[in-house]
Image (cartoon, rainbow, N blue to C red; front, side):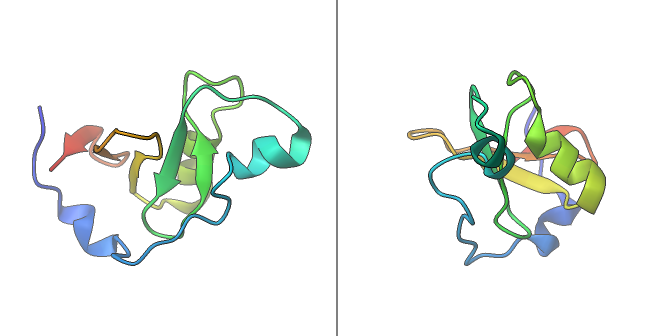
Length: 88
């Protein structure tokens, strides 16, 4: 269920992807990914939890940046790690 999230105040409305061509860490190590996620606090692009390296979640655990959005074409959703919830 989607809800309005209190962590939205930490979202940078003008965020730009640091590595628009893929997962930052996977690109550095030559690894593959399944789907990409964009950190809405800093612009980090990480791979999803279905990917072997799960860099988006690792980024959250290292930084506590709460909200990501899908970085896949034609997908428009956000997720809050802190609240473990999809958000509007």
